[in-house]
Length: 314
Image 1 (cartoon, rainbow, N blue to C red):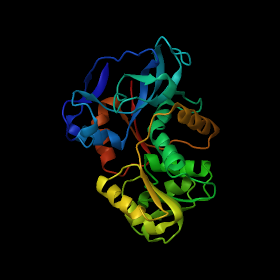
Image 2 (image 1 turned 180 degrees about the vertical axis):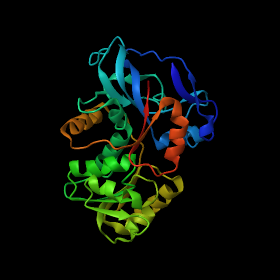
Image 3 (image 1 turned 90 degrees about the vertical axis):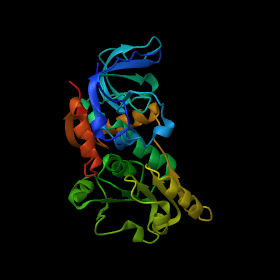
Image 4 (image 1 turned 90 degrees about the horizontal axis):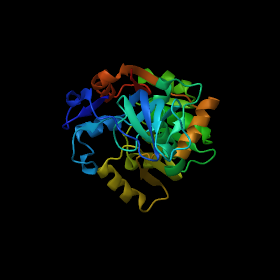
């Protein structure tokens, strides 16, 4: 099969498009003919070596987490899916989705809602599971909470704005660059701040939850804008900032959390229901072909994309 892989850490130029072995599904897995995938910030962090301490030292390494496609084979114990089903989800490891074929765990996979294309489905899984787990599980969002989403126009942030309302928020404020203000407003944000003109950390005791989807703030910086018992959550933790935040939170009612999303079949089922109902919808900035993954990652690293970058797989 054709796939995106690399044999050494480095810039986007290390990415190669070529033949790799087609994976074989185990008893509880399904083999998917990938029709669309995506690019996420974690992809270039892995490629650059930022996460090599938690990764196997072996090469080559395949890229990508999000899969949307058709089932072509199932393991002996699979009961929910059959060849021909349209499905989406995340690969179990940290790479392998940017390819013609990928293996998914049965329990972590969902049917693509009828109102979504393969490209739209490929823009959903990782960012939406991240936003959901961040707001619900780590921020413990409560009905009526005032929520601020930092980086509200990115992949995770755009979904977090929509999900905050679905989870019962009383107010949702988003921050973004000047060119993305209208997009974030269209997602339903109560107010939208251009981060170049307004620093949300200067808002004193206003928010119950600060969800940093951009990795551009810290608990120490954001503490003053949180109300009593406020929660700060980040998806891109900086070890030094987290350590400093732990000290700041030790004698405070305000708390911080840093996390990486976990594959979850129940979360995917919930997300699918919201997508089918129109409660949430994916935002796609640009679409590249699988062979253009290098250019797609370079574009993503500029930090200006709106929503998701999708890869089509012929």
